[in-house]
Length: 149
Ligand code: DQA
Image (cartoon, rainbow, N blue to C red; front, side, top):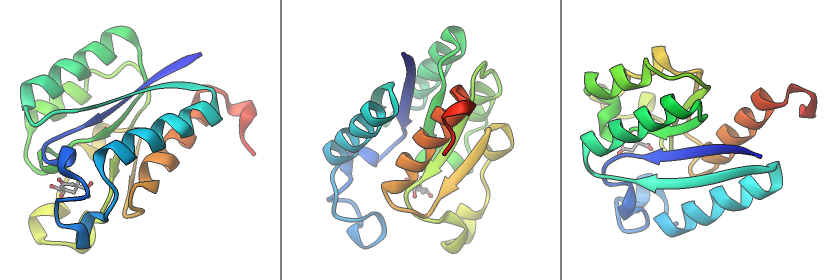
């Protein structure tokens, strides 16, 4: 069974309490449950993590690179300025999909830049927590193109 890491950056542990008008009412625990349910449906073993610390996120990206593990990554605010996260993404050895709950392109100007996108396999943004579901479907198809519907 393919293992997938779903990695979340700063403030995403506060989903449900954090700007619900932007990020919705569902909590981080709801996100974990949704990713694991989707993984079961797709035959993926999904592990979901969240950190507010840049170094920890980079360490997880190194772990994924060393293990050839596909990643769904929501770098949160690091998206817009962290060259360190970008350089860690550049080391990837398996597909990596950048996701966002909101649509950064439709928000403040500083969110229009992603320093990560050019290194990702693709980006899915603006679909609420469904962005993660769509990303997991994309990874499942990339792992097994024959499974494409
Ligand atoms: C986010 C968008 C970022 O601009 C923001 O800093 C976040 C969350 C999203 O999922 O919509 O923390 O990545």
